[in-house]
Image (cartoon, rainbow, N blue to C red; front, top):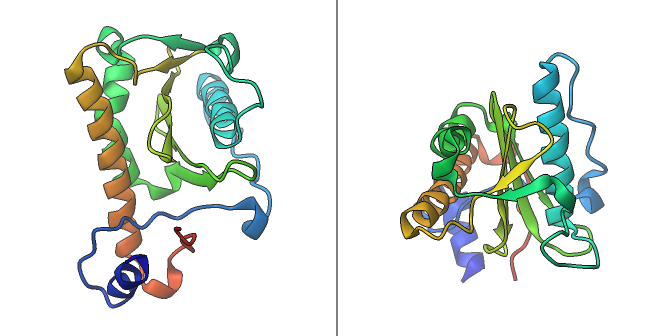
Length: 191
């Protein structure tokens, strides 16, 4: 099934699969430090925390529990924080406008695929595969903390989170498909 989908994609035919550029350190080498000095200090701190959380989702520590991310993650519905709600709304457009703002990696030990997106004042981090797991929003306005938005008790809140994930992935797929096949990032084999 996957092989036929892949052939359809290569021929430029419609496909139900999503193309994502995935960085695998085993194949592509270590990730460079992405926190550049030309962004404001608040954004540098936010980006650094998002990168740390991204790494922890990709290859979680051997212990688990509510504090596995340390004390830096707050469990708050996105609707209660304007910045988090704005991040959920703006993330898909950011991914479409600037594909370089998105990093998708595969964990060395876990094999989990995790996406991190940096906007102007927010970052979003979540699992692509497996699809469950925390969805974290990091805001310039809330330094040193991430907001976990996937545990909202309101079904509408959960639907907003799921829609954001789907739309970010579709945006990445659209930007990948617009590139010539030879220039596309490698896609890991799915089993």
